[in-house]
Amino acid sequence: MRATTFAAFAFALLTACSKESDTAATGALRVGFSQIGAESGWRAANTASIKAEAKKRGIDLVFLEAGGKQENQIRALRSFIQQRVDVIAFSPVVETGWQPVLEEIKQAGIPVVLTDRAVAVTDESLYECFIGSDFVEEGRRAARWLAEATKGQGVVVELQGTPGSAPAIDRKKGFEEVLAQHPGLKIAKSQSGDFTRAKGKEVMEAFLRSPEGPSITALYAHNDDMALGAIQAIQEAGRKPGTDLVVVSIDGVKDAFVAMKEGTLNCSVECNPLLGPQLFDVVEKLHRGETVARRIQTEEGMFTREQVTDAVLAGRQY
Ligand code: GYE
Image 1 (cartoon, protein in one colour):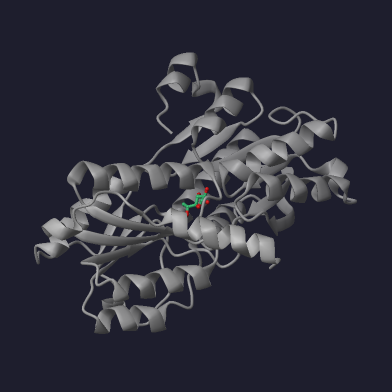
Image 2 (cartoon, rainbow, N blue to C red):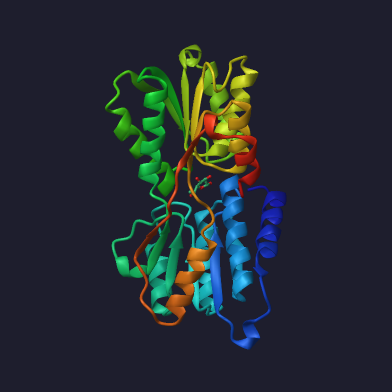
């Protein structure tokens, strides 16, 4: 990492450490939250929901953003142990590599809540609860919609999320599971766009320039931001997203609704980022010594461009 980039990052990390209220001295509940970063519209809405809910409940929240790096998340979790927070919550960027730090937290006697993404650990007692969506089902929903919209025929390209992350692994799995029943739909190319708009655009440009480029008829993106970047690449290549190249993605953020209204995005499978209220319900229960459910699943739907009227767009919260 270049020195200037590092300095900027270190500064961002420091300033990201914001106390939502000054209640530590009054004995309020203290919660450490390690957020992945700010890679997408979904993440921005998720962060806003968590901060707003903590403030509403008078919880002393220590919120750290990791710039998309697991090592920064691990460092944040260790700092929460040192600060002796009451509860630790985090959204793990990737699935593996958490066992040692989770063991340290357990030794310190601090309960852990996972939000949004799951971890792969052998010892289930290392966390109390996982709150989030069923990503495999989201992938299945995207594929079912695509199969119906294309009558089971087409050349598909896939933009995957962050390598090793639960949503990238599961959304691929669910999509492929359904696609296996539709032999006329083939994935010609599949690559990571790291859940960002810029990478989504860059990778789609490469797909379109490849020998298979002219034959591509559909895009499946693991999140809206990558789809939105790709839509720009498709337009710049002189093709029509939403019409001669069908686009389906996941999240259902406001910008996706705008694109659906414009007709460039065909369908977005919803993944609800507003996890703040559920998270702090669980945190408060744990603090009171009550038992909590191991798994809390978020309820969600899906939207096609035909459903997006002006009123629907205006009412979309995030
Ligand atoms: O879909 C994507 C974000 O983990 C569900 O992460 C989340 C995903 C979301 O960057 O936009």
